[in-house]
Amino acid sequence: MTWNQQEIEAFTAEAWEGLEAAQSDLARRFDLEDRDWQMDQQQSTVTLTGEGRAPLTFDAVAIGSLAKKTWMWAWANESILENFSSESAKLKQLTETSGLAFFAQPLWEDAIEDDAWSAAAIALKVLGGTAVYRCPIAADTSLFVLLRERFNA
Image (tube, rainbow, N blue to C red):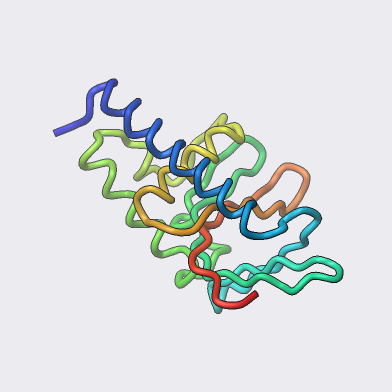
């Protein structure tokens, strides 16, 4: 069974609503302005630091990256350690239920940042988490990670 256009739109809208609520809650609870980030793939964590502020460390799951208008799922990216990316592979199962090949294809060409945020919103809805963080790596490259429970502040 595959989703019709109305079901796809409803699922996506619900995912975006969840993302917006999660992002607002994260911003309300923590001062994230002017924070630097550090990622530890082996520990599957992202730490946000800022001058004069305690670091915030979150469990994290790599979702995917946007580089030069190409989205790549984390499960397909050989530069991301498996323990940090393997959970993103669960999203491939959405191809079976939705009929959308996007979830099982490693790359999506001509992607824009809104597309990456849509993928992140869906990951948050399906995999669960606290919020999503976009880790800027270079001028045209970002890694999107799912933040999970904060384990220190």
